Figure 1 (tube, rainbow, N blue to C red):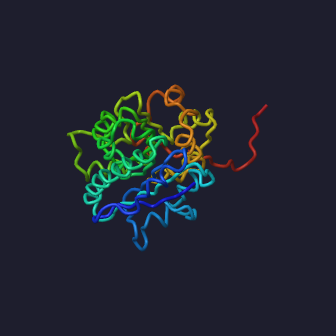
Figure 2: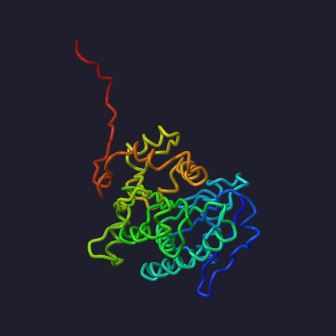
Figure 3: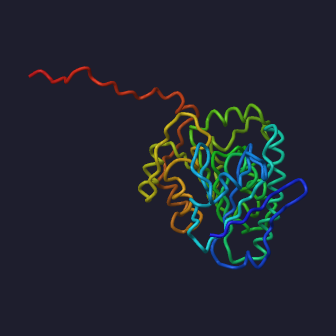
Length: 302
């Protein structure tokens, strides 16, 4: 897998590859982008030295996305898309929209140079806003599959993306977890929604045949994915914003969704999933399950 870095700065896009490099091969192009607090070139928070690096180690909140998506697959072209996501949440929120418009130019360039290659995207947190903001700027068929992880974006904006020309032709897989409820709640209190009363996509996506939510801390969802050949570790905590990419086994699912979409059709997944997601706060309010050891070896009386 070739890994290329592309960054959006105030001065414009940097690192856009030549057309010959994009056209060389017929495997998928997978765009990866990060969320809040990262910034390309930052001494401590550069995504290309952390989650978007093929050489990144495994630590708290850090795992190498490129390596786990298939560094051994020579046919795949991975694009690590960096954008300035530091400052206040409101500054990053606006920057995410600008980064989305710039990302649309990147995707358009790829499609012109390599119309035979499917283009997919995977994004975490505010990175979901980046990718979804790009979609309305794209032509029909520009994107094939998009996976958003614990997305910091509102349902109305997701609906606008899905109802665009490119959005109607792509598939959107929304990875959610009740572990992220606190972050969703705080986000909704800090960032004004596009329409009054709107909720973030962690609460669910607009009903569309090409959109699907996977609640990865729901036992029914985990059982369905195991039945499909993708066992994923159960969550260990009640609150976590990074579980959607740190959970053991989760990248096996993402790799299959992005590199072999026909093996996991959305209709097949939908049929296996629980009918309704668990409600917000259900994980946080669920009483702890504690097994106390008996003080002695108890035997029933005869």
